[in-house]
Amino acid sequence: MFRNRTLAWPKIGWMAFIVFILCTAGCFGGGGGEEKPAGAPAGREGSDSFRYPMEGGPTLTLMDEFDVGGKPERKPIDEEYEKRTGIAIEHLGGIPMQDNRFSLLLASGRLPDIWMNTWLQYPGGPEKAIEQGYILPLNDLIDRYAPNFKRVLKERPDIDKMIKTDSGLYYVFPFIRSESDRVYGGPIVRKDWLDELGLPVPETIGEWYTMLKAFKEKKGAAAPLTLRSLFLGERTAGFAGAFGVMGNFYVEDGKVKYGYIEPGYKAYLATMRKWVQEGLLDKDFAVVDLDTVDKKMMSGASGSTIGWQFYIEKYNLAARSHRSSARYVAAPYPTLVKGEIPKFGQLDNAYAGTSSAAITAGAKNAEAAVRWLDYAYSEEGSMLNTYGIEDVTYTMESGVPVFTDFVVNNPDGVASDQVLLKYAHQSNFPMIQREFQNEWKFEETSRSKEIWRKTRHENHLLPPITPTAEEAAELSLLMERIDKYVKDAELRILLGEDPIDAYDAMAAHVKAMGIERVLEIKQAAYQRYLNR
Image 1: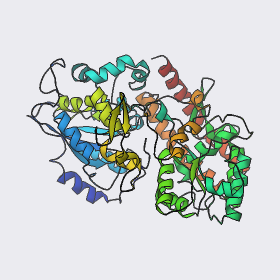
Image 2: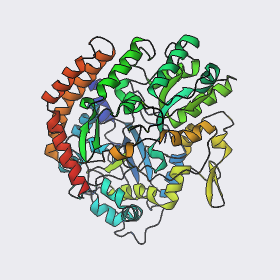
Image 3: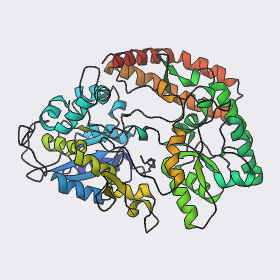
């Protein structure tokens, strides 16, 4: 649910990181019993008699993909989880898979017991990570020690299909989004400015242009529209759908497409280029981070952005605390013609691959790792992960969990999402997310997802396919070059360094670089996924 995950950790040099590896060598690999061969289960052999908390108080090490500059702070949810499961977790921090330190850690052999990451993106695919001896296949471990997760797979064949490879190997305990939380982001605008200017909440690209011009000329907004770095994909999710395309890959009539070379993308680029040239889109669009977006939105330097549901609450809460009349609301994904439904917006698969936990091949207590992870898929664990601690963050009313004022009207003025991040896992954790029944502090927050959901994106969503190791290696080689070229060429066009007609040469060059082979590989993987 909560997306402010673009966190920065100061880069450390190779020598410093090697020292880190050596110094933490005693921490990696976990504890809780005598050493066993890699992946060997420990303790009881069956699931029927097992009860939490687990006997023996094992300790496990965990690493995730969110780089926060060291070990994360220990929160109430961590204390509660340890008390309920009987399993202590030493959180070692995070390394994104794209970071060079990820490969260095693999080479060191000093791996955590549990490693949460986006294993779908592992070079060569998840089966390659298993083949290379870094993570364990989970089929047998799930059978023996994960009755809750096994039940989920039986009850949800759609989920079962998503979280295994074409050969049937389970490789992670996944984060599964609730149906309602698959949409969590979209356009956000200053409603008080619109009211003052006599303008409607924009529904078309034309209305967006009129609004942005008015924000600049009549409200003095230096950056009427501000976005995080364009390379995060937010601009295609926000506006390209009006032109019938989006960046990256999607499905059209059963065929995998690459949006950057599809009809409509040139018209989208021409529109965004015009907005840049007229000062309607933040001139620093290529490098703006989340903190900068927040400051501009809350200071009046900007009047619109693309953001997540709780940005709306954060901005409205800040306005209230400063006794400002500012009011922020969700706007629908725009179209070219009023009344049409946009083809694309923001939509995730229930399993998008992020924050999913693999058990490393060197884990010394694989059973404890499975037990700790399986707890999240139990009724009790699911309630804790989604709603937090009963009588602190929620109470049960007529059988329905309802958030307390500590969450929705926090006495210290803390936003709801920030409260829940301390007392529940919510997202970015291997779990199956429950549906929310609550209204949030601001009506604008509660209604946002309903507004953003009105697209046809579901018909075009590419599922979590798993190319073979050979296919994945070829894809990686091709897409590394294509991605860099597309980003550079697109930026030159948007900044006016190249004319808009340079797009035609860009699309031709992408084809020459091998995008058709990429689409062939992805199409084959997509077909295998459908046949699972």
